[in-house]
Image (cartoon, rainbow, N blue to C red):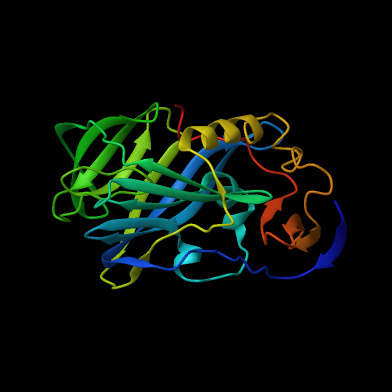
Length: 271
C-alpha cells in the first residue's frame, strides 16, 4: 500500500448515511460504554466511548456521541474503542428489523436482521443509579448473558446497542463476564430526526457472516499488534498520519482510520 507521511492535529471522520427520515426522537439517552480488554503486550486495559441513543416511537438509533454532535475531530475515544467495538445500530420496531453499520478497514459493512426477542427474567431486586430507582432483569442475546437495570419511570423499552424489551429504559447493562458495560449518564428532551442508515456502496453481509468475518480478522492474535495485517497490499491507498504521537492509517478512498496498534477484540455477539 502506498504510504505518505502527513502530520495533522485533527482528522475528519465521515459518517455516511443514506437519507430518509423514519421517525423523530422523544428523547436522547447518553451512555458510557466500557470494554475490559488487553493491549498488544497482554496488559489489562479498559476501552471506553460514549454512545447516544436516539429514542423514537417507531425506531431507535444508537451511535457515538461524536457522530451525534457531528464532531469530526479525532479523540482518544477513536484510538481503539471506536474502531473495534462500535456499531451504528438502527432498530426499526415497526418493521421488526435491526440494521447495523460498522467500519472494518478498508470497508464499511452493513447487516440486516430480524429484531431479536430477548426473554428477560424480571426480578424484585432494586438499585438506585444516578438518582433513578431501577429494577434488575436478566436475559441472553446472541450467546451472552446480560444483567440489566431498567427504570419504569422512563416509559420506553429501548436500550443501548441491541438491548431492549424491558418495561422501562435500560439504565445499566453488563454481560456475565464483566467485559461489556453500558451505563446511562444523561438524558435530553430533544427532537431529532431518526434516519435510515446504510449505503449502496457498503459491503452487505448477514449478521452471522459479519460476526464470523470479525472473529477471523479482528479475533486473530496478530490484530492487536498489526490491525491491518489482513489487508492485501495495494487494496487501497492510505495516508500515514501522526496525531499527538499516535500513528494512524487513513484510507484516501474510504476515509477510514485505524491505529497502528490496537487492543484485543472482545465480541458482543458469540453466536
